[in-house]
Length: 338
Image (tube, rainbow, N blue to C red; front, side, top):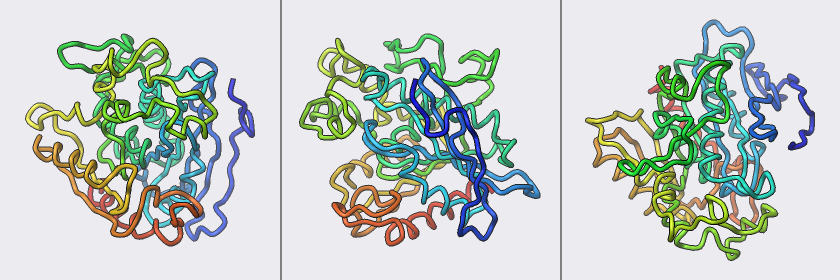
């Protein structure tokens, strides 16, 4: 079992410089898939006049590094500068559980977090009918997966439906007595809008390009040996349908068949990790399918401009780079979560 800094303890602190008396409930245990504890922080205002819209954040890190703390400053900024309850979520990384976690299980964590929030967020002054997801890089992939795959919930997990090349996802959290199929029918993982920052949308191409190899330094940074996203015994060569099934790029529905919520996409003009070209290609695919999108390129910025603190390697800092982008995101959310 993963050890928590404060095992099984939920506490409340006041965000020091908040003018709105934002309360932060830290390390809320929301699920324990196979005994691995998953937590989230919830930023909320006590005793609101009416339930507030909810923003759910998934952090980046290539599915191999970081945790929710990398989004602490973003979560606090949105809570302070917008009228939102903000949920900053931990999910399993590929190297967790002795390097056995698969990419579809990480998507199941993201879906499970949304379902938990749907069930419990009213306790924190949030409106479960007005929820949005956001994430950057790998977190952008997870946020986009929630948008796309919340109608693919199933107990028959990790089975490729050959007609659609989609996986069935068993969320890491389900309300007591509720099946995955019932959760889908009740739209418990549904969101009203999404903001996706420099997201990863084509895992099939990433695997072909060496993501699963030792040359990808994130494996070493995450303390894990490089291996396939779906575990030993699989490969992008033998199982291409698996990789495409978890890649948003191959799963965009036509609007006449299924209308997705409006989405706002951002990327830095100097991003060499998830390039502007890759983001534009995905947005164009959504547009061609008749889906509603907005796109903004942040001039002069590289990858990870929303991370907390400062990154000397990238030359970014939250205080210098994040506010302009976050103000645009809040403006977009205000428009669609009114």
